[in-house]
Image 1 (cartoon, helix red, strand yellow):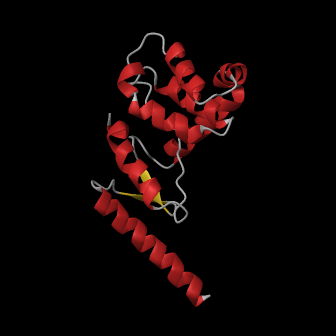
Image 2 (image 1 turned 90 degrees about the horizontal axis):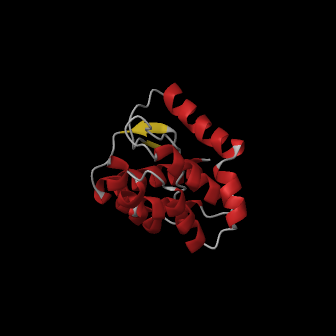
Length: 156
């Protein structure tokens, strides 16, 4: 899946721009074509409740082939949670919780409102951008945005 293909690029960008750029992730699980997409989103948000979203996010994408077609992804996701020393009772409760569901559904509703129909979809400063095809292309966009923000600060 395309999101999985972008994962290494985004991981590299997060390192390169640490402290300069804030990365946000919004859920848009394509349940029509990925049977465990919603469950994976729930696992990521359940980990987020314990401050470990990005770790779970990375684990999910790095091991997508392990769980994507599984008929029982629960033990797989719980295994990931254990690797991060999450409170397992809380993780199990959160993954099923209305709160986690509401976070994901709000992200989906916002994506639909904006007319997004595929993943990944990228925004830069709140504006949709064409998906960059390389680290260099993405870096150029980010560098330009950083420079623009710095210029705006100097003018004020």
